[in-house]
Image (cartoon, rainbow, N blue to C red; front, side, top):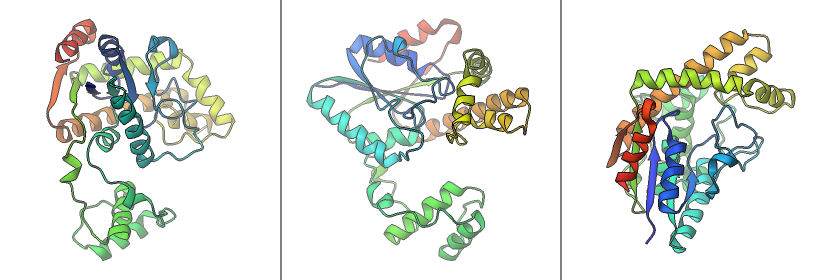
Length: 290
């Protein structure tokens, strides 16, 4: 019977390294659950695992989508379950690793996404003010902020497709597979320091050159941390120093949102404290879980 282990945690907490060690122990294959690492060409800024770091372990759903293509959470759910079910049928052990919480839940829980996205989104060209006005007409007591464009769009898409103003969350917490969740949780201040240092290492490893190549070739990376800030530098809006500081700041903010999400949304997770000074200790604790 296949063993499924899920490794979650904020960016820069050591998920990739842990996944490799656990995969070696279990003779497992790895499924990526990072929404940005599915894309090609954004390697350094996303801390994407290299071929050498993979150590010969099979990886799925990583580095395979062109940046000019739209890859939705529904696409991920469909592709991920196809791979997951195939590996289970082959009696393979599986490691799922990533920091995109909704991708993980859509893969492993009873998320019915098809009805919500099979119709073309007719609201994309509307301004936030227009979106908010439509939502207010449907429900004047809604608590969605005018600047929360994603939530406004999701609300309207759901209402347009189902006629309902709320989404039934019961099925979204119903697991479809048997799995263990390992939550790598670092001390917040240590995490922020590690993020700052990692950004500096990314710059010295060629992030500036990678981002410049994409910019010069008119590849849109304006939604990806590490690239959107450098694009502002290339557009002469800010200095390089400001761009690097913004990468650090935005990455810290992203990590904070991840911590909040995993703390509140993932039940039955096994927390493991991240020890940056002795990461082998962290890996040993993870190995005990399996």
